[in-house]
Image (cartoon, rainbow, N blue to C red; front, side, top):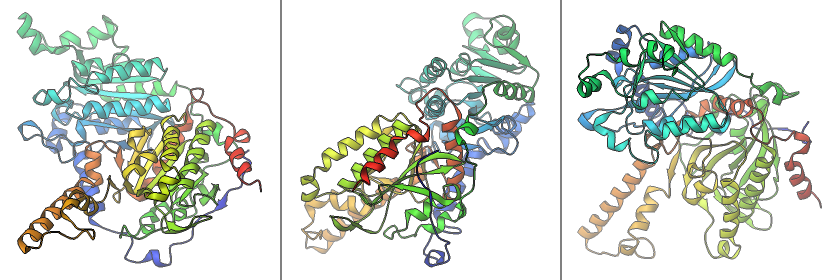
Length: 570
């Protein structure tokens, strides 16, 4: 249907990229990610799991597994929130005490939000509300059903000041519930145990609410009621299924067990409209890349100063390794184009590395943003938005071009145009930080401040204004000469200055760790490079699943065609 040809990309990695200078096999950064994930998955640890099982209930992760289609991948979000953070009383909250992500139920992608009942009875820690809201936002922006698996004793009270009062504090979860309802996004809730205060409010706006016999939803638990009203009651007496299913009407159905509740939730999802993925594939079929996505680590040199070919990356992401590049002869430090993921059209914008010859401008280093590339990105992003194509940004950017010539050419103005383009998209936008995500270039290529639906990082990601040594030099510039050497002449003073600069550089390098970025929620998830294709399949299908809530043009009338036709006029 589209008036364009797709061309093969990539070559086998049997040359220099097979050497030891590339990311492959075990490496400290890769092992650190696996270890951090394992801590999050463990939640409250074996004792927490045993406690839940003794109560005759499933853990949060067991509930997620039972909810999803057999064999369906679960693409977890926010796994590393609160990674390395210690709270009051020396407590930790791996994953912020909640499991969120994307998975399939009856072949429909859904957002799942499950309180981790192995950890402090599913309490909400600092970071928990924001993590829940981020998952709700994904459901809202992609119009995916949201399924809540609720068991929460409310706020972790010793840290209430950090999760209760702010603009995105716990109460904002319920605002998101209302926004989802107003947008017509289906919400379903299973209540499996204690759901106190905010934990009780969260499921109420859902379209379907199922309670097990062990579940209760209360504004205040029995302990508070006893203290305030001197009555001997249990929480089940106050807000169990007998009350909320048969009296208050706050829930729809009572079932005996966790397993029964999850079967009901699955059945409810099956009654929703089916996925539109097959419709939007049209004549195409899903196909794997010709080159294995598991080879992606071998594309990237370990030395960040060395370059690689973005075409080799795309060849391991798009169906059949086929791609159409738009405007290839201008702004050559940028690649823009379209390919298919799982048979679905997806637009891509990424950075080329190495020394690149730009017609009319000469040879210049890639990985930066120059006037022509900025203009190309602006036009391409607006066209993708107009056509309704999901847009994936593949970032490896060092920042904007600088200097007298850059200012004379009006980079500030062109940059403003790009900022407008990435600030007002009508299409789903996803950002992947492949390697460098530096300075204003990170912003200009749809970094997190510009609200991508999701932002993924890799173990190679370095997210900062500038590299540690560069920043240290800038911080101490008043004590350095024009060659960036210490002005001091006394050996002790020189040694002290160098020690200070090294300390700053090391601190910045630690801040650039992608695991710490994930802990701070600066990225939604850190993934292995070999997992990127699977993630893009999930995101492409999720972006195309729903119909009728955003503009989607059929490929015959893409404005992308017009853009390319005009450029090719001689």
